[in-house]
Length: 107
View 1 (tube, rainbow, N blue to C red):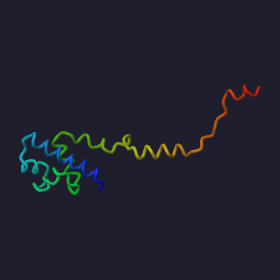
View 2 (tube, rainbow, N blue to C red):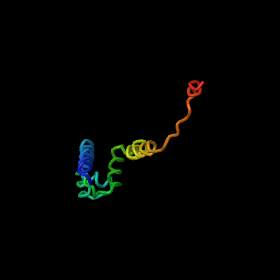
View 3 (cartoon, rainbow, N blue to C red):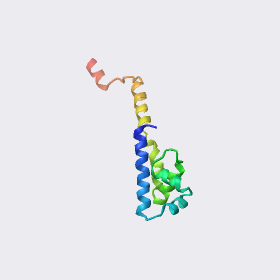
View 4 (spheres, one colour):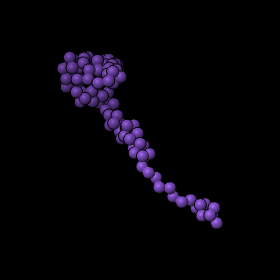
């Protein structure tokens, strides 16, 4: 996993920990609500990439933020695919259409 991605996952974990603390939820109760053990909750709050995505998604659901999940991979935000489409369009040969003015110049 790229270091930049690991840092973002740690930030997500930290944000989830802050959300739990702001709600004054004890570790034990929050872990039970998510359906995980306390050690797994601790790993999630540290941004451990080995914690299942479903665990992160359930924590987001508890925060009321699970609706944001589909937008993470929405096609309209897929810059890699957009760049590929642009390259493909640029590489196609474009047949030049005759201009209406080309006939006037010949007369």
